[in-house]
Image (cartoon, rainbow, N blue to C red; front, side, top):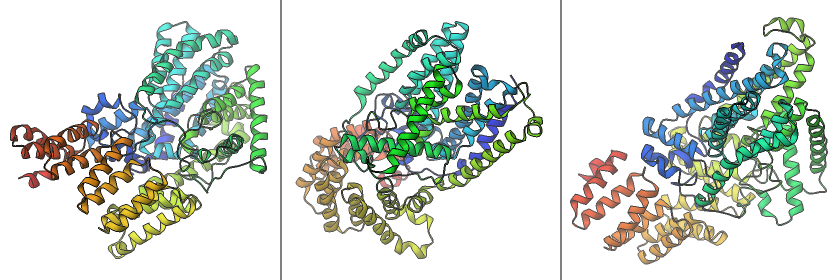
Length: 612
């Protein structure tokens, strides 16, 4: 097999995304890496990571995700590189390049796109690599979950097809193992279970019954992941309407029509990937009913496309495989069957767009009149229509991608782009507002603008509330602003408003308790910390805070279990060890205090001077 296409694909991915290597952490990187006490513990946290939900170690209390493999990678990076995003950005780029190469390998070895000198297979993989809709996945470190899942699924498919074609059970075992690793990278990989028999039927021409029987091999890893997940995740039910607007209505028909309209929007972004946004929250997107043209247009296109996929698949045509691949792998993310944590996101197209790329490869193969063309530049002279379309699409895709990745440079560039690209979204205003009211925002602005930052941030937070008044996080961050300003009464007002809107928000109880603590009402603070811990028993801040209040009251032995639990759930945060050491010191047990204080200093060397 000629390796030149593989090298070109790898180079294309690296050149397109090389700028991201110098980017900072952004968006969900904070909750999973930078502000996650579990991840920050490094290697020692690995066993706990595989027993915990994805965001364990962060203050969020609602987490239905189980993705230990990418989180373990983040912990290892923290162990060796600390608070340096560059190694992880580089890893994302390299894994993406590997995905493009492996997609080409699958298409070359097992599909008709390997004919014509392999040009159609190369085109399909190249257009996949250059597609702008993937910019979020590659540029955002957290999306290593998407990247690892795709890489492992493509590897699993390669071994699966090779095992069936060559009757090699060892390759089948490798395929099943890779599928399990993909499942613990991202749960929606479960949809790939239906791709295996589809691939055997279309690509290897097995009869349907025999092809479906082979899918039984993947039942064990699928059920194993589901069993583990059921023991780990801490939440259930519908998400907040701020995360998925379909959860904001009980009208099942309206949910269905909206999901259909959004699925049509996904298709539109595959064909016309512009404009793009990192967020599509309400009211940038709204519920779509029967009476709206967007529903009927989407339904018509989707129906025709799905029917064509079934028809072509029945004739074992590769285009049918590509179309059904799209529908299968986007089934969970579409919200048609279950309501997931978000109603729309470009990253959710990362796996389904493989089917789009395969179908594009079929189209380009039809443009090649020569059936024995070799992989060289002569094809551009011999097939001008093919060359014009390929170079045109690659150029447009690459320019759009190159332009798009810049918004992911840091949180400021990202959040400002969100307000610009999705000005009706409450969440884009919220993100920018909560960023600007924080002290860290000052490093991005000249000193002459510092006085205005907080006010601008408050305006953005209030804009978010104006669009979605029931969005508690915006009220919470306004409260945080007043807390930092030591305006305790205003902070209390906004925290209580947050609790009134949603009594299940643990962070609001914790923050309100800190206000009571500042006001000297320690008994009320203890009660509120208990409320926070009832809603999120692994909330490290609340555990440490309650222990601190007990310590302030001289109840040192009662404080110990809270500090011990805090270092268990957030072993990478120095404060838990510090408070535990100080408590033992206050109990007159310096020998027991010393290892905890030493660990606190190791995690945060700035504490050394304070402890002397």
